[in-house]
Amino acid sequence: MQDFARQRQQMVDEQVLKQGILDERVLGSLRKVERHLFVPGDVLADAYGDFPLPIGEGQTVSQPYIVALMTELLKLRGSEKVLEIGTGCGYQTAVLSELAAEVFSLERLGNLAELAAARLKKLGYHNVHVKCGDGFAGWPAEAPFDAIIVTCAPEAVPAALEEQLAEGGRLVVPTGVEWQELLLVRKNAGRSQVESVAAVRFVPMVRGCRDGETGRDR
Image (cartoon, rainbow, N blue to C red; front, top):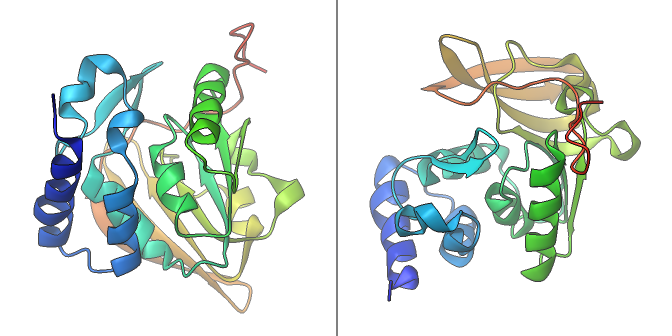
């Protein structure tokens, strides 16, 4: 039987700390959230590996270091309202849930949204709200957000997400097609300040929402 607790500790020590992630709250969240409960059974043995994993529907969950890096860039202190674009399996959502007051997460694929919502509820993440939706539109009814994180890559920063970012807020998003870069967008005095953080590789961000029951885009 696999010792997932030991693997999780090794993941933090060898993949995350050694690559420069130092925020103790982020490290604590990664030590606590059980990543193996969020991945399909056929990749369970690799749950804590230093690479992305397939989660179905052509989607992936990012490698632990990238999850840690993007989370650290948000500088969450516990009182924030966070928007996540791309729920996926819900792992990044759970990490955010440990660090913020509320997390609103959009997933364009209805089947993934339903599975992630059920999984997060079962695991006791009650400050999380998941729905199927178009990430390019954000979640205007709940805006503004203190922090926004995007786990798929649009060609450029979606205008709606910049608009829904609160004053003083932080938006972390990978952008680009052939070559992608992770951007940190900060809003100060109504203006966006953009900083390039690292070269990355994410699945592309797609418009629309595919209903979980019918499998049709809408």
